[in-house]
Image (cartoon, rainbow, N blue to C red; front, side, top):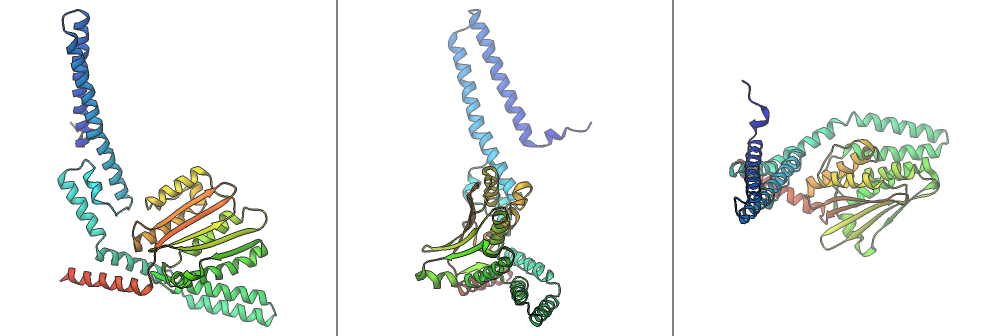
Length: 357
């Protein structure tokens, strides 16, 4: 006879035994209540069994069920790709020593310099794979620009030049980090292209403290961090708004962090969609569907995940929005120059070599 799949899991067997013990206690309590009514037993025995039952229920709930549910959530996050797990998380969940050691070993492997290097190489390979003969694209755009200049179509020539510059930055450079100045220049190129469509309806404002300019502009940032968010603000905020729309990129420095806030005064997001998006951003979840996906959730999670991969889980993105007022996307990254990042990568490479030896 084939065994039930339900009882192949030890957790389900433990639940069954717990229920059976509880039923036994309840039966004993009811039996003593009947005896008390019939005056064949002392009342204190009823209260004793009732007290034991309550203590048993509280113990099972707080000592078994709550930690077990927490471990289920932690494992689910691990399966969804959230590989950064604090050691304190293991101390609070109901895991056997062998399972704990297994998860710690797996987490250590996933965060090892070798695995990080493999993931980085895969990303670079995919980026190179997507470069479908870029020179053909540039030459074609340059031909269009030349024809436009001959025909006296200066606006077409300017837009074609901006488009070529945008594609050159997007396609050819596969570095993990660029400086903020390069990223901001790409945003201005993209905005210049969009202005041919929206005209004076669309305005871009860039703000920072002048005394912090050198630090901000030289700070390392994952390539294509700002432009996708700017594009998201235009598509899902500006396009749906009547009248002039303002986009704002504001930089703020703390001692160790650079805070970038990209704002629009568009239509905003529903409270439910905003909460779901921020929840997915906190869990590194790429599975964006429905309204959230239509509102640019995929682009935002892509940027957020790349920030996590390069800088760690303590950095990333959070979205604020008020329906009918607009949306703010706040990005937090460490103040790191490209030379500092290269030195860090060099140390990782040495660690990798030492591990091979």
